[in-house]
Image (cartoon, rainbow, N blue to C red; front, side, top):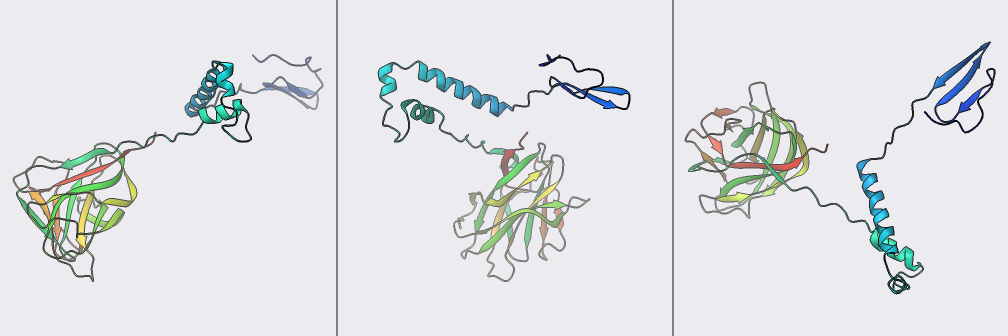
Length: 262
């Protein structure tokens, strides 16, 4: 219990004893209200930074007089101590988290489907871990001409068909993509990441930009009853108005991102 800093108040008085007891006078009654003792709300980051400060002070005291004097003049306008402390406490931003591979199917391709402005392709997938998606990797090749294409992550309907509800997207030029089959892996990054809760089916869609020249882009696939059971291939011949499901096909894809912040 907190120790009072002053004598106890009389029964008819009002006021506060220490930090945890308040007396209120109502009519002939004196009401005592006990406040909860506040908890230490310092975060882990605050505690870690405080330890860095303590370590810097210890490092200063461990220096010889000559070593301390060597800091004089290094920082114009600062004493040797403050110059040393500024150097020791210089903010170093944390390293960004490593990209993590989540859902994928990336082996066994020996065929493809083609995409342009009216022929849209989609691969559905179901994350087993909630995360933030930032980029996709796909095995692609193109024909002679290049063009702009879009890649999107969308929701799916109750039957797991792609919808037009876009969670994130990226428009990319197909010019860097090889013209040689069986293609190579490319990794467009989305303009804004999207959070994908686990055990929900999403669609990764590729299509040409309507109204622009649209030579074909080819997405490699495995049609030999592949073993990715958390999604399927879908194709649309009318710019995503309706879709056909191919249960025994999988496109070559990987989806990458970061764990959700705790």
